[in-house]
Length: 247
Image (cartoon, rainbow, N blue to C red; front, side):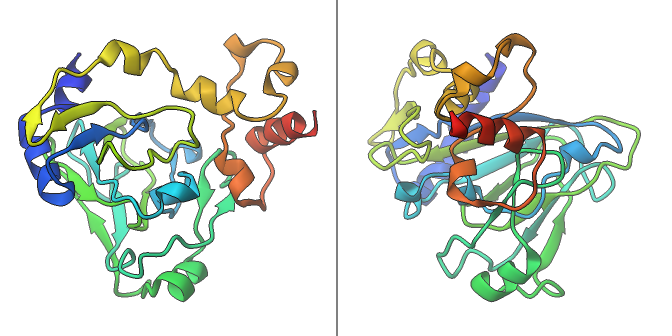
């Protein structure tokens, strides 16, 4: 309930309304992220959020609020952004998948060539205190840094967009209306939560149900973004994806 209340918080919606207008819906994509110390699997490489979304949403403004649940800095998994990297309005070419993860990745050379990012001047580390947030859009290149502290870093990322525009999740799940004509509406959280995003993402991969014998103990993540970008690094997640695709 606390996450619901935060997502529909009036002060946050007032900020978002200034960006996208008086009609506001959630994105279907949100995350509660834990970054345990010295764990490479929790390091998120350079990417644009639109690298995960479908092409129909490329012209949609999808603001993200990254909200840490403790003070964050460059030592405990804080965020870096590449300023001005969104100004071309382009989605750069990503690759899949980074390390032993399901994350797409954006090479620095591609950021320079396609997005005009000067990696020496434009990369900014963004310390965010508890109670604060980092607000950016779906074309902003960003990444999270390693956690070399002794604490677990917890953070939420919440997204919003206009309800009359494509939601970006390949038709698998829609967002939830929060505000209409500048007035709050009663969200139907039960309907929104009745569709589990992780499950529908996995099942969107052809043959997934035939491949996974016991879903309860499966720790791999697959999704339609793996079909979108070239797979340049294989791991357990991409192996499961390719087995499903061969069915």
